[in-house]
Image (tube, rainbow, N blue to C red; front, side, top):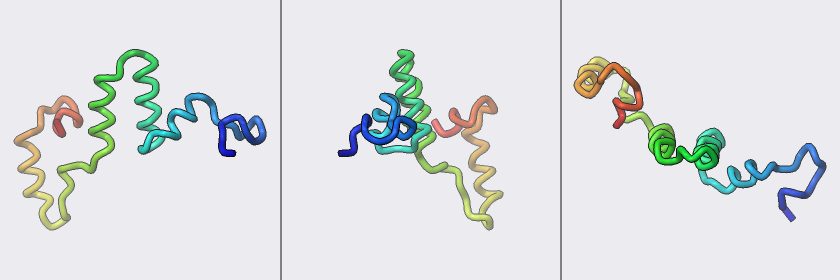
Amino acid sequence: GGGAAEGPPNERLTPLGAVMGQLPMDVRLAKMLAFGALFDCLPPLLTIVALMSCEDPFLSPPDRREDANRSRQVFSNNQCAFMTKV
């Protein structure tokens, strides 16, 4: 039981779905990794998926928002939100 070939045809997992279902992460991130491997661009996608799967380090309580914004500006490069996290 539980194989990808069981059940009605419209409820079966595709081969991609079977791979994604084995990854312990959000389905969208798993799909990015699967396609990254398929299109031979996995290394940069590993970085992107790692950044997208963690909580934003710049989240701040509402009463400390201005302090957080000042601190964040030190690391900002005005090019990309991902680069701010790196």
